[in-house]
Image (cartoon, rainbow, N blue to C red):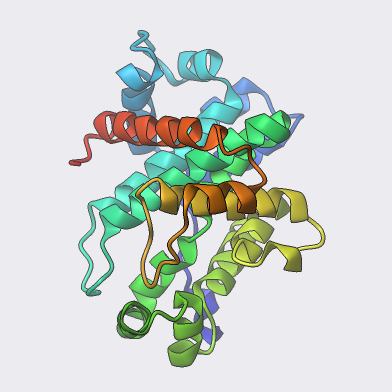
Amino acid sequence: MARSENLPVLPQAVSQVMKLADDPNSSQKDLEKAFERDPAITAKILKVANSAYYGGTQVPTIGRAISFLGMTTIRSLVVGVAFQQVVGNRTEVRGFDKLVYWRHSLATAVSSRILGKLTMPAKSEELYCAGMMHDIGLLILERFLPKELEESIELSTKSGRPLLECEKKFMDFDHLEVGSLLTEKWGLSDLIIQAIRHHDAPNNDRAFNETTKLVHFANKIADFAGYPCFGAQVPLTEEQLAKQTGLPQAQIPVILQVVRAELDKAQDSFKIAA
């Protein structure tokens, strides 16, 4: 972790939007000014806001987009756009498919929002962001420690051992530690930071156990829906998934259908090849 000072910072406009969306005293004008600092992100937000994914409504300006979609949805959209940009960058790490990574992150984000709306609606958009970022540490390892990440993925896949365990064998830390450190440097909310750090073992998070547990369950739903991440996977039946998440088994197919439909629409909006 000695190289933590070299971790990338979140683009200024994205970081500012996240903070403003969390600030009850911020205004729409404050948010518009944040977007003005990054025309590229503004253009991408408007493109997606005008897409069929959001109803195809004519949204000519970022101010109208904020009014139409709301600040919390804009925050989720900004995170989605920022993540989508990593898909286009090539990787030298064998076994690390960025499209697979993006799909898993988005599926976990959508699942987190669904579970949030069912149990704590006021936090559903923040949970979406936590779900989208839950494995962000993998991007940092891919950038700074590609050889070690490649070896970790290969060992996990071949041995069936958890990826986190394999990462610690080669690096003495794992992507959850790196991801939580990064988002702490970005100044994101404690809910998001702790969900990243503890979503694999939510009972270790006493301060944000309820929300971290939702991201933990969302991660499992994403895997079950057909969007797993890297390394060894533990197969589950629908009955086991319902038991682990505490959801009625009859709800599971409905949630999976919504997640898959959201992924299809998002891929179309972002022009991502299936």
